[in-house]
Structure formats: C-alpha cells, structure tokens
Image (cartoon, rainbow, N blue to C red; front, side, top):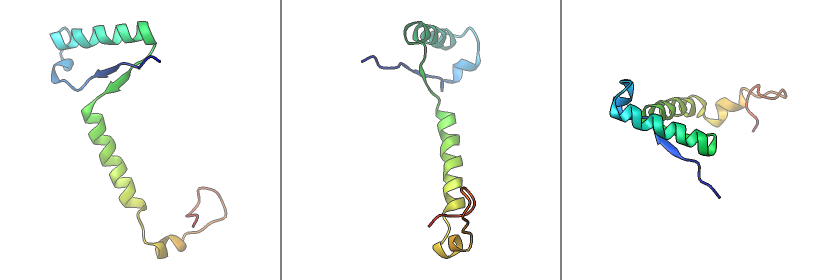
Length: 82
C-alpha cells in the first residue's frame, strides 16, 4: 500500500519565491501530485493555531454538569444531551 507523501511547509525560506527551499518544496509538491494526486501538508504554525482553537473550545464547553442540565433541549444541537 502506497504511503501519501508528507511535505513540510514550515520553513521560513518558503516565503521567498525562487529560494532553494522554495524550489525544493515546489519539486516535492509536483512529484507528489504526479505520483499520488495528493499529499499531506505539514505546517507547524497551523498546528499551533489548531491547538489554540481547540483548547479554547474545550474550555468553552467544559462546563459543570449542573450548568449543562440548565440547557437541555429535545432538538438536536440545541443544548446538552446528558
């Protein structure tokens, strides 16, 4: 089974078109698309943002049980199902 290539987009030199890093990643992307029609992008700054957003969402919805009981609804996605 073929493994989807992972391409690292987190290098600082990628903001400069024509730099050696830019050209290297460009070649990797083209080869991945030619060989697999897809690739997995690795980008550290996106991961940091994702962790921050999901961390905030967890804090937002991490309410005490008594608070959740105050907001119960028979409609889907309205309130908490306990």
